[in-house]
Amino acid sequence: MSLRAARAIARSEGAALSGSWLLRGWVVLVAVLALLALASMDEARSVSRGLTGFLAVYSLPSAILAGVLGAAALSSDLDVAADSVLARAVTRTDFTLGKVGSRLLLVFAAHLAVVLPTMYLAQKVGRGNADDAQIAVVALALGLTLVFLVALGSLAGALFRNTLVAIALLMVVFASQSLIFDFVGLEYLSPTALLRDAEEWLDGRAGTWEQARYMLAFALGTGACLGATLAAFYRRDL
Image 1 (spheres, rainbow, N blue to C red):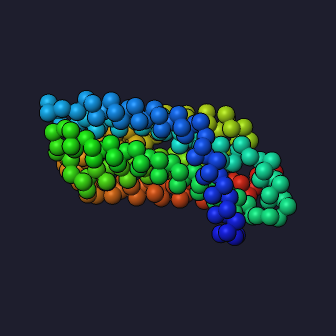
Image 2: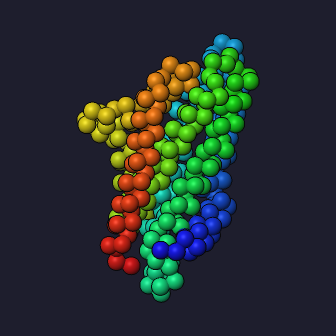
Image 3: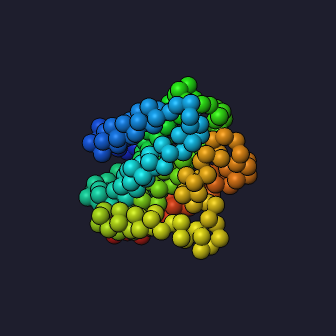
């Protein structure tokens, strides 16, 4: 494995994605949602309640963006992978880490760039009851959720050659995740649980362990998906 090769792929991929219409469309959409959320803030509604509504609306297009970018990381560039890997310019690990890693960082950075300013500005225009620490925790937790979706999408992309099939599988899993977590008795780890309880997180009523176990679970889940993606891509016929 060559970190230099992985970084070069990640830089190239990040530059290409930063100028894509998919990311630009997402930025415009969530910027409009943020402005609408800030405009709706007033003394009659608390900041935590207003931000909970914003995050609920914001999470859907953001989850779709994360899933699509993750699923397309490997399935959309098999010709490039074959030329690079089979010519021994880079290893499969370099290629996978560069492609997927760039998407992980891009989604996480874009998320924080939108959510943190919106949440902090909400404190200035609304009836504040959310402190800085809780805002950072909620932004981090939701960011880890989106990063997990990128990693899960990359796994689907490594398993299927067709990008649309990978995206469709990811959307099915994402849509049914609440039922899956409820079935195994881990409903508190569902992304919908975070959105449902966001008001309690923001105003400090949620317990520290509740927040920590959610973030730990999605951090470990992201690592597991990356490991599975590497294993699946190594077995893939290029």
